[in-house]
Length: 427
Figure 1 (cartoon, helix red, strand yellow):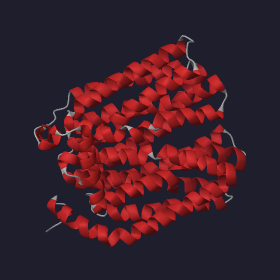
Figure 2 (tube, helix red, strand yellow):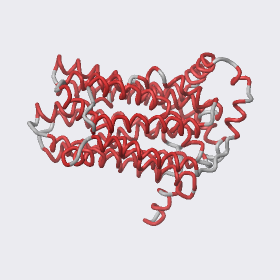
Figure 3 (spheres, helix red, strand yellow):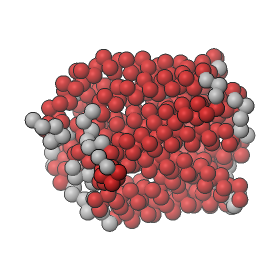
Figure 4 (tube, one colour):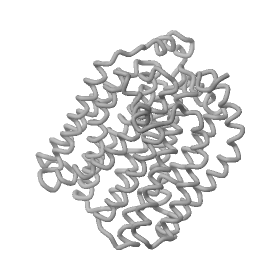
């Protein structure tokens, strides 16, 4: 395959008008999100000078993903996902404009910041699974789901690289309040993009008319749990994502400690490390977007945790700065492979009338478990130090990969008929 063919394969989702609108709207929103995340951390420490408060605000703003998100899965199947997203983004506009005005006027306090951060966490606990499910709605061909999710992951990675730098410039030279205002205004672009899309809502209309829509929200939730955990591929994928979120992905919260205590660096050093993970993640996203479909993603989910774990252990053992940056790029790539490949695979194999609930469980396993993992790693670091904690994290990822490899043959047997049914493999 030549270079132009590769580019065509990578960008094939942009032939969809809806996806192009979605991508453009998300490019502003995700950039604003990372600007805001950086600003909240800066403002929280500036108001309190307390590392404990930083941990509290991070934990409480993310924990709704564990508690509320499963119920959100039922909601986004009962109502039009586009309307759910528009409502969620409207609430986000109000929250971020409030943050911006309070900061600019000098009225911001630590408790106000904590309260508004928790409110935004609640909004995100609905918006995240709704956005993931909506992404599947606007992809008309099953084989393009892997491309669409990988392109979205690459966009998120670019925003993760650019956002903190923009926030730092605005905080240092103007005022952090403008960061919140920019994020609030960015959601207007998302709402406009959603409004201009032409969506086929037949699947949700059929769900609304089905017997499942007439039972209680709790019964719908229980049905979703049974569906997910009785179906071997989904059970294995979600358990692996949850285990990786708890034991593997939480390495990022330890990088500031590693930077200051081990390599005696500063914020610039941390920026290089985070930038290296972003570059690795971007390359991995481009690799996934060039693949023709999700066929083989189960193998990627098997070896990626081992690569992540081995790179983490190597990162703890080497003393060469350039090798360390290279290992961080590998860690970023492996992390992206786990999250994006599992997302695309779940979107492909889920029944249409249960996809909202499946993606809510995915969001819970990825984003809801993460703060618990960060909390656990923080306590572990207090006891054994950051080096041994990172090594334990890496070894745990290798063990997860071994369990995944043991279950791979059974997984492939179940997945093959689904691939054939979706015309991803010849019968």
